[in-house]
Length: 296
Image 1 (cartoon, rainbow, N blue to C red):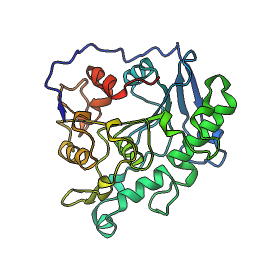
Image 2: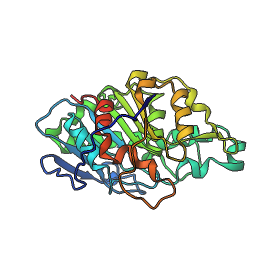
Image 3: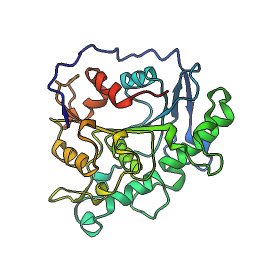
Image 4: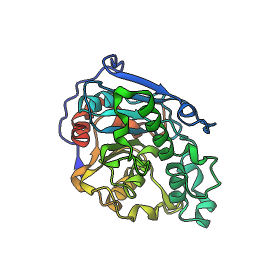
């Protein structure tokens, strides 16, 4: 585990980042898939038209988040590293911690894994949340890539879909998530050989909410090579101890886990203000670059 007691460069990147040099598309999920009826805020696509055959960075937000807001400084850094970005619109509420808890969790210790499977793949039975198959993360990603392949020819989007199976070409897709989205990225890494995974304070799932025993799914072997899996959390956030334990359970290499400790970027009147620091505070740009690597 890498502790940030070192003195990082504190240069600030403007919160009003200029993305005018990039092609920006907004596609409602219902445009890409008419069967979508719920949570229809637009997917956001950003890319440099002069770069071909680069990797996609798939962004998954935290609980209650939407594509109306995204971490601008981090996105700009990813674009500078050569990635193209898809900020995916998916049902982000409720989160796992609001459903898999208390007596319900006691009766179903695998609740968190079943929840995440439903929200990611949509192919299992989990009636506790209203998500339908067309609402799930991967089905929405596939439909968006199909739509872009037909409607944005200069983007060359067909390269990100296996033309035989219709599934994403995971080797050309990196996944980054915050909180609930970070947990989704980790779950996907256990089932798909993804180019890269970055989890910013990825959600903490339990098999027992009283003892805070972490969920059993974390012990499942990663399909994505462990050296391509990265995670951060802030040492002052509420679940820091649990997040450190989860990183070990996932067998993320110690050098790929960053225990952040710099002062908070902006005062936030929230019960867990340090929770978003990893992805929002530009002081961590050197760490972002290390985790992102090259998108080319």
